[in-house]
Length: 139
Image 1 (cartoon, one colour):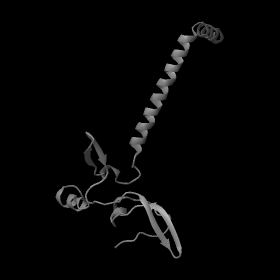
Image 2 (cartoon, helix red, strand yellow):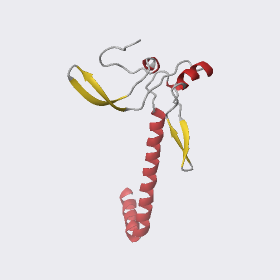
Image 3 (cartoon, one colour):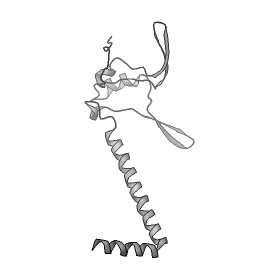
Image 4 (cartoon, one colour):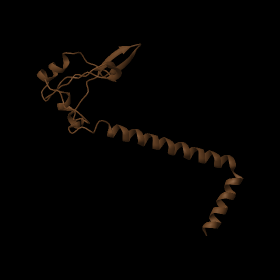
């Protein structure tokens, strides 16, 4: 039964090559688009969920206009963290972090230029990154 159906299907495909190619190409494009969309949605749903209190962690974005378009950056003025804590109810902690850029690190005679960021001391109270070695420095 299956062998007969397969043979009939292949005969039909060989007679209508253009139609078959169009159908298979459409199916491939549709499946690829669906899989890419599902991968994107999965990435967005998993973004920054490694922190214990991820539902209450927010990033402040600044909207700036240029060339008749609006650009959004995860940048805010320096005093905004302290102002948000004092003036917005529900904000219990705020942390300022710089953009990642190459930093010059020294250890004894060794000089290393590695990408890094500066953050306030309350950073590890908000984000629970595990330490591989060493301890947290608190001031």
